[in-house]
Image (cartoon, rainbow, N blue to C red):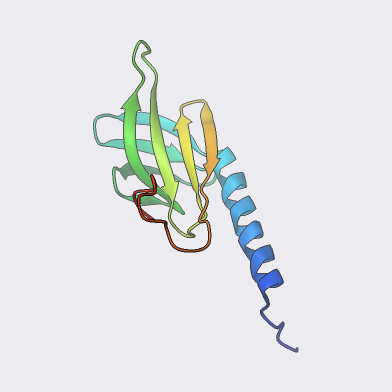
Length: 118
């Protein structure tokens, strides 16, 4: 079997595929039970695990457990750090509320830019 040459186009397709895979995974995420203030029992449809803030669940890192003002509903903030263009996901007991793709624009950050980190 002949190896496939790695080109910018194939790299772009791979990045697109990984981003799509992360988005599809985010659609399966759900909080089974909140163990406030520092952990939540999560499921991705195949695996269920208690996840603490800062710990990983598959490709996702639990960044925070939040309680909306004026609402008894809690939600978690998850981030995919497996690629620079991963996703942020806002998830509660009903499933994924928001799946937000991250971007990584090419080039240096201009001085005085409002972007704090990269």
